[in-house]
Length: 162
Image (cartoon, rainbow, N blue to C red; front, side, top):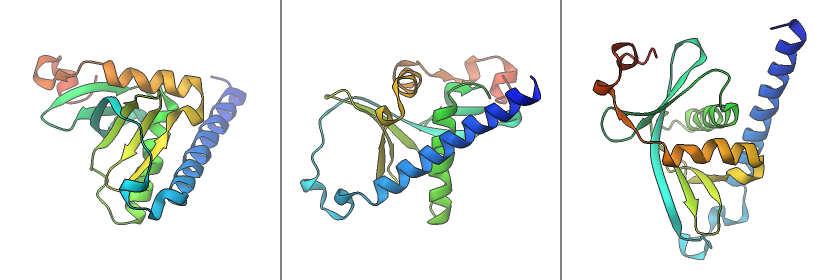
């Protein structure tokens, strides 16, 4: 990878981080933030999945089911930068508010077609479509990806080194 490609890559990553933090700030300052739940208009969920985000070596991350040792997906360093940086931003907000960084996240598809990334521990949600078609397409795959029991994957993957 040339020096100019590395600079461009870092610029793109920084842009995603700024967009993610901006989205979080907008959500936390939304007019609905102080309303009781009954006043917030939400459409019915069609599909949802809770998962934990675990950082691994060499820039990889694992999406793990919240119940049991089940692996949903390993995100490689060059893969799904939007999701990786958004979740890291959400974890940073958790840390600032002294909340557990290990709490699960929730991804849900709503009846109106909105794909939402939720942080139940901070009572916030983020509309993925605000970040474009590619972000929606890459993130929506997580809803339908079957998880694998860690004991069923090769030994290297059991240590989350796959």
